[in-house]
Length: 404
Length: 187
Image 1 (cartoon, rainbow over the protein chains, first blue to last red):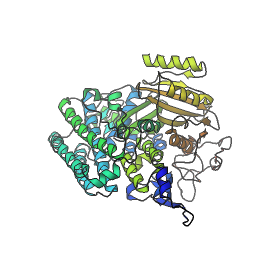
Image 2 (image 1 turned 90 degrees about the vertical axis):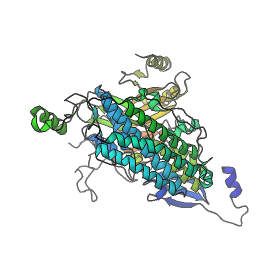
Image 3 (image 1 turned 30 degrees about the horizontal axis):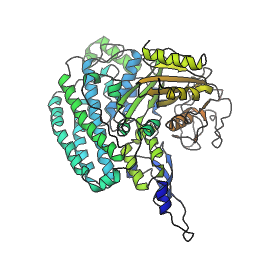
Image 4 (image 1 turned 180 degrees about the vertical axis):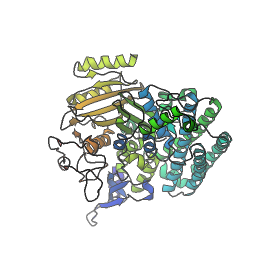
């Protein structure tokens, strides 16, 4: 890039140029939240970027140290608010590893199904929002229409559209409601055709292609060095998916392809996400097919709430169990665990140190967006301002997760 | 003990001998304790050894074990993409906590280390740009330390904060931390 800018620089001494400081954000539609970039501009060319994050810092990790394990679930919702079921799952898995328990099979299927729904919802948002950043508004409106269907499905299961908090340590909160299966089957039937629609909208769009193809290329070595994960790294040709390589829950029983692209540019990252949505639909269909009947929560009164809520009103033991778990929580044996899942944005890890009490001694969230966003500055330090917006959109950071 | 665990521990023992201590395997992840002055060497060894190739730095995390001594800990989580192994390296740090930066080994360490500095005041020596990342410039104290009150300290903007002496202030220009922390923790 340096050569190009040298050519563009005015020759001779007749023109004086100086670098301009530009403040992009924190309130700017294409920063996807509250990201503030202090840019040093040399014409249209970004000479230096100084990112400022932390506008949404809520101290999730510090708060978690004063919450019981069950109380932490709503905090995890608010990390990546586009796809909360994945965050719930990641945290539940970490605590379950510490306790040495496993959720019943039906619960695992429900969790995986919800995590895949969340993946579609997260990918839908960004596959629509990236073109919008580049001027193609239509795709986002269509994407939102389908995202609404997922919201409705999540509302049917959990009663909440965004902050689901549906996982519990040792299972899920409730069983699937009546009338849910036909709804989700309908979704699985409709959705693949809709994905085709988005592709048709953008695949032949010359403006979109020239704004994304060959822009923001990340080599596989750079991607690994910068800590990229998830679709961002797979778009650079690194074949790594935690769902396949370190299978958790029931992913080893499901058949799916890991989508990779070799180009490593913005378009490849966009394509990867579109293809992953197709795979997610396949995964959901397999979950529905294989899901056995059975309990949705582990049968351990010291950890799980009574499965039948009505028993709380007529059984002394159930009442005590419910009260005890709500008021004091449950003790988790001393130890430490790092547990990572493949969240829509990449590797979402929870590192929990337990001192044997009801509250974690230390909880660290390895937030994929935080690491992915950092990569922006490793890539675009020698690019044009307009390209930086494209790269930012294609890396898909969610600021709530960046800021924790 | 799995094959991977014995491979990793043999290779580390060959190179580092007594310096790097092997810890108990906890929940499938092999852990080692390293002294701060050898952490960069150990990370480079783990990344570059052809049989190990821990090329992916997942996370760097600060921990405060107040009132134990040594008080702080930096925890590194590495992943090997070719071998699909995970490993944890723990590094106990005294007060004030100082540890060499691994930004020279992985560029991704940059923000992780800034976060640990911001939250725990762990000073990563050799870091190219060690500034606060979440808290604003001019914020006093390190909020995730165990002796920092959950609600912060009382001031004009925070009437519900805890009473107490002002926290230790790092010098934001030189990043030097005054030695010794506040002796009276909040209860």
